[in-house]
Length: 550
Image 1: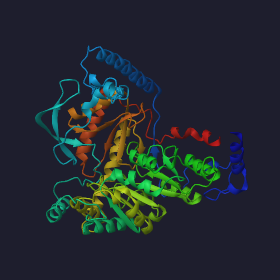
Image 2: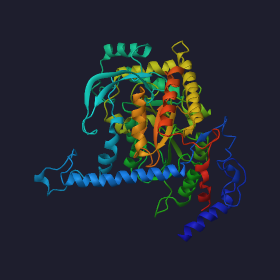
Image 3: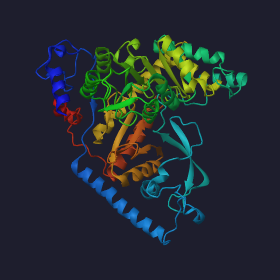
Image 4: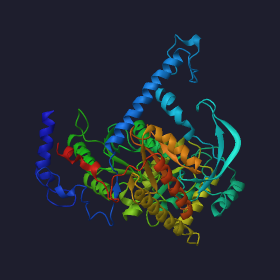
């Protein structure tokens, strides 16, 4: 109510907060006017930081909602017909003998799956029968009952250009140095380990890997885990608990959200990549403490990602680090998509911004994307890693990483670091950034709405309408290009998109072939929504500054 309002304004106008982060004196309400994100705090960024999220054109938004409305109405109609057995029902159902029990399958819960997703389900779970490198082979499949079941025709679609795999540095290969090393290790150690790290599953190759990862990241110590998702969902509960506060970006990955929920900490969400929103939450947390008792929080943990895999945006790390130091919070950085893919040396966002890895308390990332392997790691101070070794569920209860996978990571990481005596790693890094800039620039010039940062290899192309999700995926496969299309619940309901992942393995010819097809399909489906004369960063989504003066 009123009391808290007045106390927070007192704080904002009081002398305690006269100085803000960059040492300028505060204006009347505690926010330095020129510290807002319209002009970036130049002293923190060494190079321009350009991200764009063009607003959805109004007509497109209205038509999108109408499309979902029509689909929902037809969904109810189909459900009605299924109920009266006019239409065959393929959904899992209770047996008649169980009709008096509490239903196991809630009817409404999968309304969306039954009536919207089913219509375009052929765009997902496509079987691939080759290395998912720059090109791949798809198993052809047909459906005779509108996507409820599929059968394979026995044919293979060859040489589909792969614009969907997270193969940023092109290490998804079955020949070459990495593959040879992995085969050798398979012959020496076998594939499975059959025990946890603390019992019989701690191999010398694991220790070698962790030492290498720590050196690569520039941290004291590191620990590797067999699964990237579990690295987040099992380690956050080991780090925070009741009485701790987690400040989480609204677009954080499901694994971070799950980990935060399992920890039992209080979770507060800030607007995506919005530093004023984060600063406001930090201030409130410090001023008010825990709810009801107003004791100070035991820990405050800021959880962010390096590259957001659906938005293509890069975290404003210099500002986050400045805020973290100023308000004495901890920082958990998830570099699943950015490690290997960003920075002059491929060392992720810290390298990209030229910061000190010691400023990030918990450096987390996965080996799944840039290294072409599996699993995840956490890097940081030695005390932190020692604590996790004995307290983390994914360390104590999970089987350790298979040796060939560990070897694949070691070899690919040494190539990236240039320790194999060649310039292959540097070439791949350069190729990736050239491909990224080229691909993004061409798509913008064609008039598509492209989200995210100019340097991000994740390129979301906005589709918006539900019917265009399926149409885009199918049309691209017809033209021999494999893409990922994404709709609700992975994105907000009106912001369906196609997502391309650029790889160092893509040649300029492949990219041109793909761009030509995308342009053609874009004209066919009228996807060139952009209203810009020339690509300029739109800051329309930042207009919430009015909210910050509340």
